Length: 281
Image (cartoon, rainbow, N blue to C red; front, top):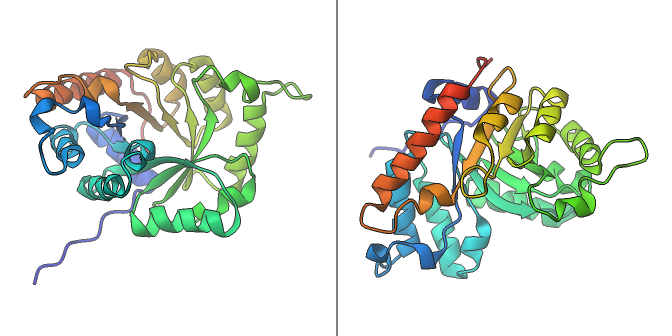
């Protein structure tokens, strides 16, 4: 009887090598609205699953990560969570699987969240709020190839309510949060989220945290400037994971949806290759 080989651990060195080999930092966000799935799939037994299978098969050689967004699965109830599990499982070995869950709790609740995403769903990374402090992040740390992705500076207008307020020492509050959160772990198990619409701040954060991976949403439909993100954020290692969702998923609503998604992903990847600097180590 044949056995399925274990998936490779998505360590920092593995991610850097994947970026160098594929010459891309592209992450494809799976924020799938069932109402926007092409009509040709809507009568399938599992239309979301079928859509993701086609997208992943068409694009998996031109990206280094996928980021399924839990809200879109949870909104469909138990069937949606089955779709989430199947979607994570169909992502090929060697590609980072980021559960975009934005969890943030403490004690046994945080431990159960970690158990869910690490053991039940076998994700490689999960997005987290660190507002409740160290014990909201620690249960996710210390596992080889598993990543706590801490929300740092986001692109939404509401970021001005708290994140960018200036503390008494002259630093914005998001810097205090990240200085603490990144000290709880290491560059081997902690990433941070910085929105693509804030390239200057991203540049400052790259200087502060040269070794850490940044997950950067907001390229594509949200209007982030890819050239500015790469120029200010690549640093020595190209340790960026740059997410695009709608511009790839919904590149076409016709029978050619997978072909058009691939073309959009390839276009972004080629632009990233031209902008990359440095080498992995």
